[in-house]
Amino acid sequence: MSNGSNQRMGLSRRALLGAGASGAVILTTAALSVTTAMPASASQSGWLWCNQCMSLWWPGNGFQVRCPIGPGRFHNSTGSGRYIVNDDRDGVGQGGWRWCAYCQGLWYAGNGDRGYCTVNGPGGHTLAGSRGYRVVQGPTTNGQSLWAWCRRCDGLWFADNGTVGYCPFQGGSFHIFAGSGVYSLNQD
Ligand SMILES: [Zn+2]
Ligand SMILES: [Zn+2]
Ligand SMILES: [Zn+2]
Image (cartoon, rainbow, N blue to C red):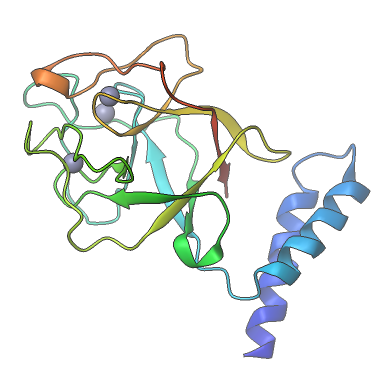
């Protein structure tokens, strides 16, 4: 166990140092303090951004996933980084986020409604089978900010690409930024 922890700490420090030459000393300090607070991080990497609808989705289940851009279309993640979403147990970020087993998207379940799902329509997303996730609010040193929550679909989408993408709301709409804070995601 201790070997595993040491390896994780080493990887984490290298990744942060690689983020930029300037401010390396500050980054190292931050990495050490974060590692101390989270000895057993279970954050999940490999989430992707879709370049059509702007949404964050999970590709790990081995099938093509429907995209709200239109009927018969699938998410396209050419050009996407590999995004990390924090596990609830890490305690970092806003809780209440879940993965939807229907549309494979990340959505906010903390408002008591199910949003609008590309696959399940107005019946909304499902909580079934999902662990709890957290998303960091506000800009961070190493993260990519200007991700946003869409109050129409409850999904997380990237709002800094000059487009509002496509939202599954009412069978074809656009994500909206109003009512959301700014969220940040780290990449591998
Ligand atoms: Zn898409
Ligand atoms: Zn869904
Ligand atoms: Zn939306």
